Length: 153
Image 1 (cartoon, rainbow, N blue to C red):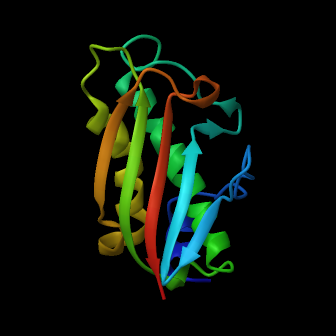
Image 2: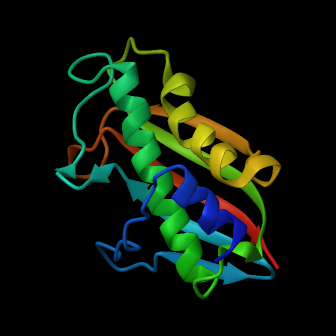
Image 3: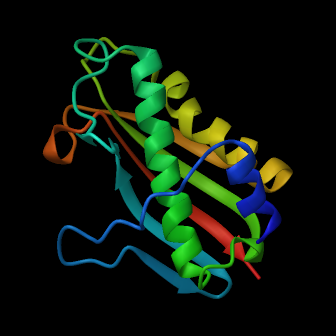
């Protein structure tokens, strides 16, 4: 068990299975020591986490949705690393998309749910560059989608 797997267990986190792509794309691409992971939409054991920030979803609920996206990113990363998360060198960048009303401006606070989890699990290797963007809609009405770039050994 890698240190990161142990950390997940310590936090009481069980990773979901790496979600299959929903259309004509792959879940990740490994190129030159980098892993590019397709956008992961907000879902949990109950299904899709849907709604609009600034209307039906609170910032705290949005953070939980972003955290769910981050868990899916880590599951995809584990798959890309052949099951060995210890290959992670650095979380390079996350890009978070928030389904939001036109007047909503707390996108960074929402995406903190994903960023905070990366640091909680991976420590300094989890610190990353980031963008947090508001959108008029997201696939299937989800509240949040997050994609990531990771460097591996």
